[in-house]
Image 1 (cartoon, rainbow, N blue to C red):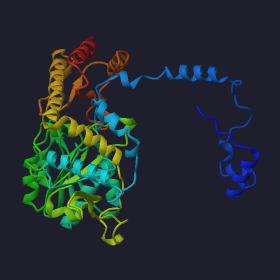
Image 2: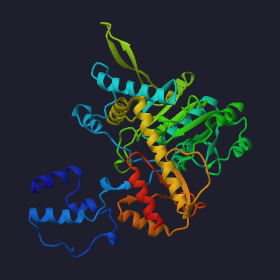
Image 3: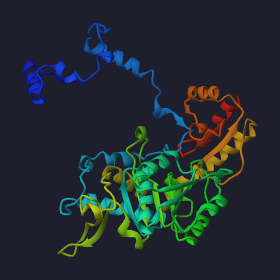
Image 4: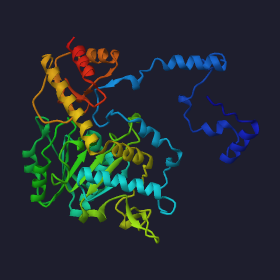
Length: 444
């Protein structure tokens, strides 16, 4: 616990620099009616040991998240982060937000970026990947803008099962561009493909599909790709739960033109919602319309392997009117986490972890339905599923929390028509014993 003191001379110096004579001059813009008047009800001074004891007592009222088992996902997933990942990203030489413009000073950072690009390109089967965006939501919005530039059209068709936060981000990004957004509804927890066929036309720039979608459903991406291409539109696949890439067909294999994703599941803790790491991938022919920057491999004058920036299309680097985006994040530390995690697991390890996710989710769903307190239609899903329940949800949530489980998501918070529906998420951190305990709790 640190105390920062200010001497009288220091206070006078700061006030002079600000341009006022008294502290009151700083806060005069605060309306009088919201200011605290009179004496504050503050207890007498405490010794340092007493203060530690008091603060520690307050902290014990909080739930210890690390010990909680989580049944909620919906865009942020509690996966196991191996200790080696934590160790690598704790090295101080990796602590930088500096964009690696100078290759002679940035070989490690550039190599790391190049390797993450390679990992994600192999997983998505895209020709090129920008690995360092703000997050999956901004990646998706950038993908939509990219599709508009490529097609010179200003209409998109988007599934209502794209994550609500992503939908909101798209609307914010595209509002100045006059984009027409046609949102199609869902049927049996999957996007209604017949609705897409009805509203698509020659003015459509792109069809945007999330798979697995917000309700966990695995969409028929290849079918949507065929529909989009039949009208000269592009297919954008959104991947919020990237762990699914370990077992599902890749975006490239399904015919997607652009993939926008979130890599939080690869070695990153939940971190109160961020920072995470978005990525965007596409085909070779569309490379000039990608936002961000790409690291490439070459050889130096001595014939040794070296890494450089090969493309930078941001407004910091080229004329503003030629820039594809002003996005300028450099999530190098997160990239080190992704690189360490994927290098450690390898293809087989990633497949095994992803398999644990989907097997556990299907096991829990089947056993919840057996209690006869849950029901739901059958649809393909990865590690999230939705069920309607007849139980008192508030009571169930309280009981789960008391047993150290974070409850599933009440979907009606985002989709009012799905009242009494819960979205369960299962990752590899939940054992069979944990899942059986969940069923036992809700059954009671």
